[in-house]
Image 1 (cartoon, each protein chain N blue to C red):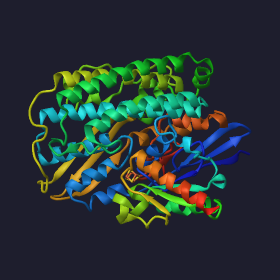
Image 2: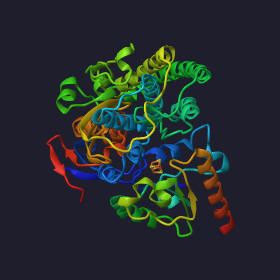
Image 3: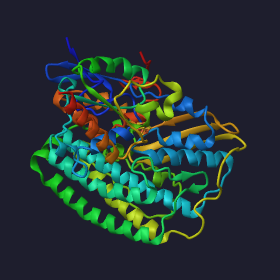
Image 4: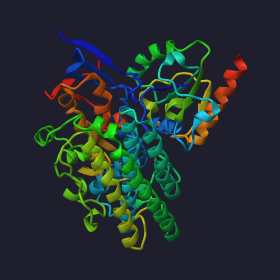
Length: 122
Length: 374
Ligand code: SF4
């Protein structure tokens, strides 16, 4: 799983980071955060998609293998959230986790869904 | 001829999208260029299009870590401009929230620093203990990140007696854990050696660049908005301003750790001395007379300054200066003559929060050259 931030308020990012820590621990389901997009099956998107970040992130997204599952986390990534007025609609995702920021439990559910999708593909 | 090493915008060692251009000669750094704007969301412009009540939510979403600091600063501004009184009890609750926020933010930073120094275990431990504070925050406000506690003229939710007791229980448990964490961190030889002398900032440079918050205090400057310009209930409370001596990453760690204990003392005092009465003075705010006002609060990372030119139903102009902005200018100065391997460590030791930082222009290389966004 690769975490890609497209210009957030930091709230979602911190909550994504808590997923790795002992209380929530996504790793117990075999989910690992990878440092390089090339190793990822799932992308976790956060943020409302600022112009600059979108431009740069395109290259990062292109490096991820074709049949990736995209999970949008947070109101920002789902619809633009509170910053909607000024920004392009964010990228299309397969799974949407709403909330500003979503509770870690909700994120975990989204991730589980992504894992299921990945498994059903192959 | 130095060569250029790009770090970011998407880099494994940095959790947010930012771009640093580092000039290197061999392993040595000779110059740094900070290039930001990946998080630029135009908060200030958006503010001028929203009514007061909605602005409060937007102010909170400037940053997800110091969300209470931003929204209380905004509320204070509007209260000053509109001549709205604040409920006494509300002031104390605001202080409690601010200190809880400081606790969780310092612990978060503690973990990230440990991680970038290669001490994963400490990262996990500190984030595990941070959940205690998150539980308290969730108990009071129902949220973990954006508490939505501020209202114009006070706060939205009360803290009753049984809540206070549960809170104290958790905080005391947390204090014990914090002692242990402090012990682990400062008695670990490799960790301490790794931090010692890295990111050195001397007091005169700190003063010259106008550094704020724990970074300034670690360098030996006694600056703290809570003491210098008391707001809310801080005037009635008794607390120490922790000041360090050496100004390196290790000192910043020590200052922050000690500040967490101080924060717990402040919360205890607040819970003990909170006056009874209403928590807010009014229900809604639709219209004010307009005017200008400025206010600053001490966010976990330092002084957070907001300036408002108010219209009747909306702000006409809004300006935010976040602590990271003040602290980050000094980065090129600190990084000079360090090794490449120190870059992530030094960057984290300043505790940057790009979410806050990315809103306006950037001053680069200490030469006050304004960089545009392209
Ligand atoms: S959804 Fe909310 S918490 Fe998440 S980045 Fe957007 S504003 Fe911040």
